Length: 192
Image 1 (cartoon, rainbow, N blue to C red):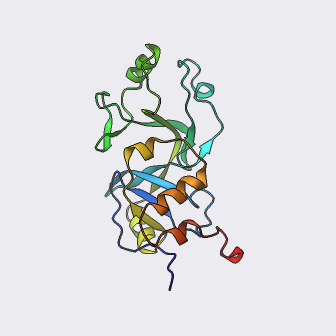
Image 2: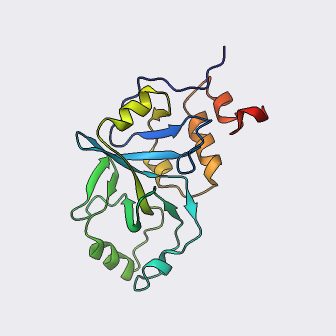
């Protein structure tokens, strides 16, 4: 028998990535990959990695030096706020998500790097809003088999190439033998 559901034993923790089960119909999370940035007794939050939007960063922050980058809708919570991930180890006040990957920090420091034309492409990734869960909610969703929990490289997390669904399919396929059928499953099972 071919299974299309994730294990109910995945452990959510910072730096891991959640991959939606293939038939999730939620408009915010269907066929999405979410980086978990924080998981504790107060709940969990992270950023949707593959929900790109056609908005230029300089449209949001007009006093920022031009930076070519794709923005992502990080989730449905606080979607009037801008958040960022980066690989800048010496960034003041940033939070380590996993080795080599950091969240936030002193934005004036980042702005100064941009103003001095430091090469930052591929080292910064911006999100509007975030995905959040109340205490125990994410564990319950994993137990109900809504999410695959996997490890993904920092390079892949920071990538903004490709389209939304291709990113999800690639990560599902990279989980190993036996996952290709999940990656290739139609979003609507009646279309099979």
